[in-house]
Amino acid sequence: MKKIVILTALWCTCISLWVLFWFSEKKNSKPARLILKTEAAGENSSSARDVQKSNLASDTEKNSTGDADTDNEHSDTGNNEECININTSDTERLCLLPGVGPGLAEKIVTFRQQNGTFKGEDDLLKVKGIGTAKLGQFQSRICF
Image (cartoon, rainbow, N blue to C red):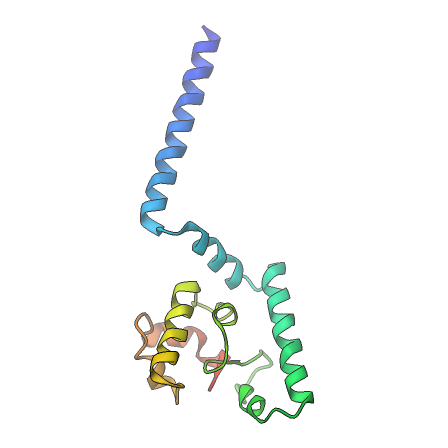
């Protein structure tokens, strides 16, 4: 009798987990992107820190070689956080911005490739998925 109860409970648990997985799969269509977005958004995660360090190191190398474009990568934002250049950053780096996941980062890069560099914040509002509220989340962390 105990075996039947245990097997029934196990079976119900498995079915419940399968249903939850199936619905989350339909809702998010790509759960791996959700995981990546969560890791990239959390600045305390080791992978996000590693990406930030490697990007900072590459910026330092560019500055030491006298690359003129790197002067525009950092602007006076009023804080000590690193400025992320919307016109030169790849999708991985754009994901470090608050509120920007892999999907939106890809839209930014695609828009930039099709329409040229962003001149200002008004150009960013033309990207599908970026409104004034979304722009406000990362406005202080970007430069052009």
